[in-house]
Length: 515
Image 1 (spheres, rainbow, N blue to C red):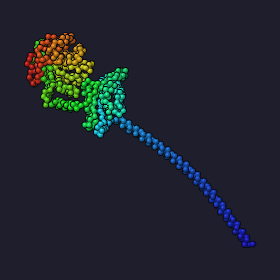
Image 2: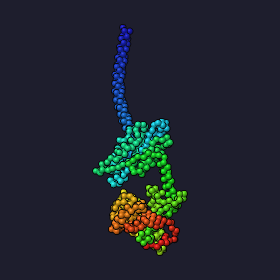
Image 3: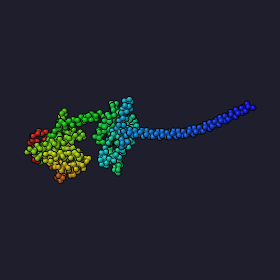
Image 4: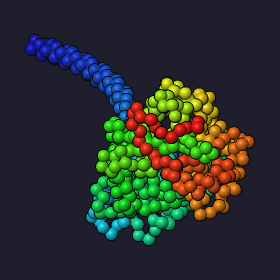
């Protein structure tokens, strides 16, 4: 019995332990479930947070990437605009000198590899653009240039290069010339430019002077081609404008000679190589001297004594003439001072010929007035001569300038009358006290009296308008008598006296004056 009881007790104990173990296991399972659930919740939380972080970061990266792409695009656009601005004209949007020179350099290189591939450069300068710009203003001038660019663009092919160098200068590179004739293009351009322009309710007209340089294997760079095309363009302008001229080597030789002459002119001024020769002006009624014309001479160290016909045009073109004429005024003032001590010529006048620049450029006019006022002589003994070309383009400005000069006391003369247009407007509207008849006109009187009535008519008009006639280039007694017979007042020429250089301190003439 007792062993059985012990056995039952043992089983109960074991059962209790098992129950405890089961409860512990269950409890552990519950804890594990709760832990797993917590871990799952935690995992889900982390996942959501991580996904949110990833999504946020991804969005930030996408935004940054988009901004970067926009910045890159803007940078590329800015660089393209900078390149365009650096290689194109801001007004017409055409290629500029830099881009044109680059394309021309490529064409020169291509020609060396493919001698059969011809090209040509057209250098175009617009006539009358400055007048349009000065008259209507820069806005109208800009509008005019844009219209010019449009018309030029319509005259060339897609593979040609049209560029604006600046101002009113355009250039065209006619590339791969085969069937296209350069002359055809040039004529097309001239015809297009000559058509009227309607700008700000104004109908305007212009023309084009074109210089053409054809391809040549001797060209080494773009500057040489442009130089030659430019030289041909100036030749076209000098021949009358509204035309084209092909460059040839003689033009280069002429340019070199012109550059050399300009350098020599400047050296001549620095080294006092200029001098004045004086030609007597006679009263044809009493055959006595009333004054002199100071004639400019250049004592060139190699070429000898040169008259203005050898250098005056270049001096005018470069503006050197203004410096030379300042010296002339000062030298004549000195000579007038010396004449005060010459009893025969103390009242004689001296005439000098001046550039029209003094009349049309306000600063030069003021300098001339100041220069004359600074000299110590009677201003009425100085005669300033201007020829007709001084008034051809700026009549109103010239008239104002003449009146200002007259107000300081000098006398005025119209030189070379009857050599060109010779408008009667100059006789009655301009304050001239002398009208000088051109030597070419006077020469016609040698073998013919046909023009004598005209001389008489001019003399009669002078009685009414207050000027006196002076005949230039009198080479014979016969012509002198003819002029006197129709009332011509004064004269000069080789028959009366040749121009002579005067020595300082010596009398300018031993002939008595009736001034």
